[in-house]
Image (cartoon, rainbow, N blue to C red; front, top):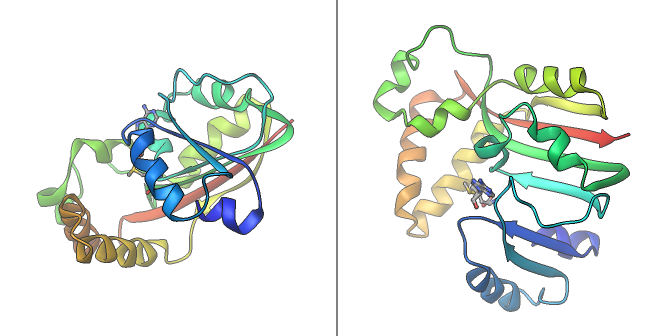
Length: 187
Ligand SMILES: C[S@@+](CC[C@H](N)C(=O)[O-])C[C@H]1O[C@@H](n2cnc3c(N)ncnc32)[C@H](O)[C@@H]1O
């Protein structure tokens, strides 16, 4: 939404969990109905033509489907040459040792967190695979604090399911978790 407003672009907002009608009401309230088209889509079955996007942006979602090594090639075929894929995800500062969650996070661990990796882990297959030039793959400086502020705002707004994430981030305070960003340019 903010991207459409700030950059004057047309956005196709594909989401799997949130119904388009729900997002449509939000877009109308934000006077963005002309700029953003909400639609339902599953990340492995995107109904778009190859090369039809200038940019693909994924915020707090790519870890749910993008850990598959084949996914980068699948999604970047939708970009025109020179188009960019940008992701921001909750992540780990470094890959975990062993098979158990870190001691201080054990009480809060959820199996979804097994999708967290490190920026270095994400960079390697992107570089190795070719087809894209990796422009960034690192941790956002103090990103966990930004996350904490966002989750606190969600909880204050009555989003009950955000409470687990709040406990997790407070228990960690940036020791293990980070927010990763990665940008790849299609060749
Ligand atoms: C934590 S929410 C983030 C939502 C939003 N991008 C934000 O930052 O507030 C995770 C999002 O991942 C999306 N997601 C998870 N699995 C998906 C899949 N298989 N295909 C498409 N989207 C998926 C869900 O639709 C959901 O909106």
